[in-house]
Image (cartoon, rainbow, N blue to C red; front, side, top):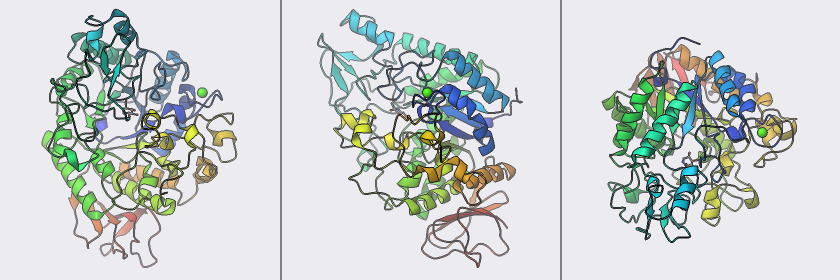
Length: 535
Ligand code: NOJ
Ligand code: CA
């Protein structure tokens, strides 16, 4: 067991594994836990500190495992409980910490509690664990499209902010609270280092279940500015995290909670990381910020200030399994609202520009003080699959919006490890639960490993330098730069991203350490390039 370094999470780089799509050990086309264990050395070579595993629990897979039917086991698709233990042990041997996903806002409709609730009927104590009403009480829509209420055969309605297969739990119920404390302990006892908390802003609903006439996701539209949606970010949700923090602190080492909370502004998000609550909260405002010097300057400044008031680090992130991969997102015209998926008939991103900006964005992010999350495949510069045939799509968002939103399958495509192998080395056969684009051989790890200038080698070098230079624990001081240029110092490192149209100059005597593309022959920094230098 490696020594427990204090506050590891404040500066850690954490790699998100989406188990279905990482590595398939048995050739059924679905990634699994033994596949992950066999590939842990990749993460060591890359240089990350920890990994976060998206759900691998028993589930009908109505939402790719975010519909859990048993919180204390492993779905046979992904292996057995014993495989989770082996993974944890193998990660520990390598000094990698492991965070697992916790889905407390809703269970699967196949969870024993929901089945009991249906069987027991209206007014029963079993129903009280969910949010049942005799009449549909409001106009809420599911985040995936369509109504958020579904009627059951006896006439009652239940709330599901997501798919109908994901009934929302009633967090006012003491049994729900007790159950989740116990689930935390189950995984803490097995040695996990923490939990990524799904929909952390959603557990408590405004008591009157008032109507809501704006978009359901608070970060997606200006319409919601200043008005708090009745289903998100209610003050009482913080009691839950104070309670969980106490549970975590009963355990040795530093176990952490990271909030998936689509909450703005930054000051409201910071409330989730007060000293007696969670440790981290994904900075989605940063993820959503436009690719301009002004927007990046603003979001970074605001995030650092807001988290500074509660003494928490900032948790930077550019990609995950819910959003368009940043290599594609940044290839859309600047200022485009992030689409929820792209299909054949939609405007296509500029992949060359997208990758160039993505590399610059990553180097910028990894130079910032705090912690950062990477999403599997971004170290290969993987783009979104934007031409996936509709009939292959599996995201409930696609179905529930009648295809109006293509959904998130495009960022969930299995990883290409080896250019000339079946399924590009994802597994031993050609099987892949989502189709891999025909041109993915060029992105495969074996084509990039040891290749100077490849995205993979850029990530490795950046992670090494970030550690050597102490950028995670550092602090940021903005530097003067011409318009269109973002420049700051973090310790001895001077960081510059050129968003402008003309080449930007580094300070006199600056010695570049790494850059996202080659600099001009005269040492100036081209457009859409980030450079780290020592002055
Ligand atoms: C957020 C998860 O990241 C997403 O994949 C899921 O669909 C929803 N929460 C519902 O659990
Ligand atoms: Ca498999």
